Length: 336
Image: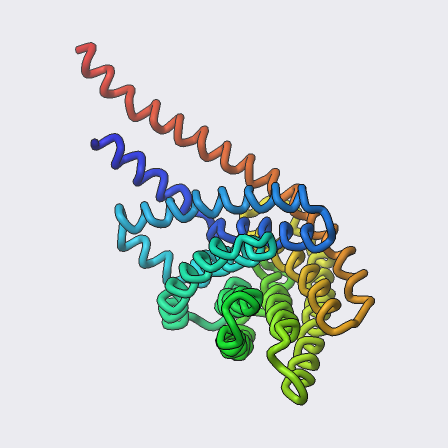
């Protein structure tokens, strides 16, 4: 029994140790699955979806185990913006499952995200500080993720869900302004990867706007306002993309860091947002842009995934070594 509890504690600690929480890997892989599905690469898209789902399950188990074994540490972790990747990752997976026609799965993920979101958001907002890293924008990303998932489920659930999605969309924009006021702009040239969420939050906001527009619930002046807002958000996202890319060129940061998953996600989200906005507004050049940006995101995902796997293998080797060392004194005592 003790060995089982000890194993659970070590497992929980391992998965909770990743800054800014490895949920960004689920977000990145999940949004690439969405983009690949939209561009016709269905087989690769499904493979990416199952990879993201498997990692989501592992992280969910680890976070739950941490809650059971070390509640104080869990509370400290849950109070930080990176914890909101749990909500954002869940909504991204929900969107992809809905696009596959698996509505019950998508609805279940929406319920999970909707239950977790207010608790975590309030906890995070209470502990926000000035001069924050890019992870602060996750307060917007998590909220807009819910808006997107609600919007894509409107045909199944009815117009009332579109109104919920609109409320979340507007709240997400307000949260973006708050995050921007707290963001340390020096992160553009010094950040370890999560600074890209500054643009990714606008991308998912544009995606939410495009899905609301595509729902067909809004007409007249409301539809025009929504269309204009969505296009403005897309333009701002692309502007952030250029600024952040310039920062990477000015000061290259090529070494692996788990926070690079928070770079891959905005790259993929910008591509998906461009594709979705193009379909909803009829701006054709955005589709071409989205396809190009999607393959850039895939190209960045590959070395990030490689570094992630190597990092996991290194941690596993370290844990095996520590376990072996801890057993040696016990064996020595037995010999005596």
